[in-house]
Every structure is written in C-alpha cells, then in structure tokens.
Image (tube, rainbow, N blue to C red; front, side, top):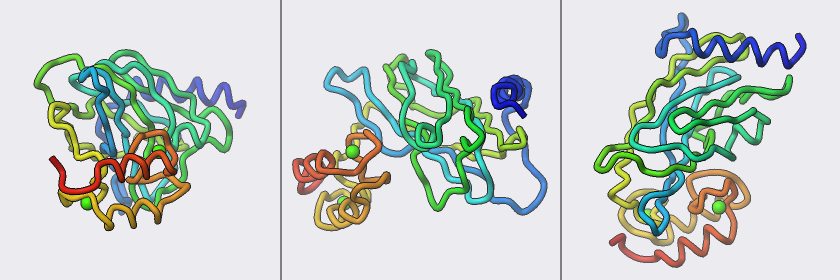
Length: 209
Ligand SMILES: [Ca+2]
Ligand SMILES: [Ca+2]
C-alpha cells in the first residue's frame, strides 16, 4: 500500500477506537509510563520521558493526553529513532509511522518512547497519562496499561538512577553500563547517555536532599 495512504488510514482509526480494548490471546499488555523528568529553574516549564514496554508486538502509532500541563512539543526516543511522524497540540501528543520500516519493534524492557516538553497548567495537580490509544501495524488497538503519576511539585533527586535515596557508585555503575545508549541514566533527557549525564550525576553525588 502506498505509505501516504497507509498513514492517512491510520489516523481516523485512532479517533474512532475506544480508549481501552483488550485483545484476545496471551499477549502481554503494553505499558506506557514515565521515565526521567525535570523542571527548569522557572518552576513552570520542563520535560518528561514517556516510556514504552511491549515485548509482544509492533507499535505503529500512539496518541495520548497529559493532565495538569500544556504540551509545547514532543521529540526524541523510539518515535524519532524509528521515523515516526510526531505532532502535538496543547493537550494531545500523536505519533505514527511514516515509512514502511517505521514501526517500533517488540521491546526488551522499558524504553523511552518520546520526550514531552511542557508547561505546567494546573497548580497542585499530578501529571498522568489519559485518553491513551495505541495501534499495531494492522491498525488494531493495543491494550495499554498506564497508571503512573508524577508530582511536579516534588523534584526528583537529580542523579539517583536506582531510586535508593543516594547518588553513589551504584548509580555510576548503571550509568557507565548504559554509556552511549538510551536508558534510565539519561539524566538530561537528550536521548543519549554521555559525559553530560556523568557531569550531572557527579554534581549530585551524596545523599538526596
Ligand atoms: Ca542511587
Ligand atoms: Ca543525556
């Protein structure tokens, strides 16, 4: 099928499908969650990673909303790596394949799907994923679990990769093990684990505040 036509066919499917469909069979449900995130010094703008984990199939498109914030852009992650076409409004992020090889293959653990740039909209509200619709390469809806939240008014510990309240050699070992790749050690959210992330980790060394 002409790929432009394929894309155009996929978009209305997203609009028409209900937000939660359980597929028959023994497939693992897909999971959409949050990875690293950060607020800028202004306390209003920031970025967050939306993560994807689906070991059983190919992702051809996604659409979701985020509560408590306005989306100012989406970029990076698997979506950019696999040449998805990305678009967003203040409330909705959408990505879909734009080349014949553009699907995201089965995952081996949680990976960054896309990075969302945002501005907080509602004081004191938690950030959560809403109205999630994902489709596979047959334009079939994917059953997606998405139950994580972020409290944007509690800043995470900046270099604590394993979440134990300390920035120490354990975190350093994790970072070095992911060097040059994507992963939890991408502390600045630019899609690559490199010297910039090492600098952040070393700057946060010690107990979390
Ligand atoms: Ca740690
Ligand atoms: Ca980085």
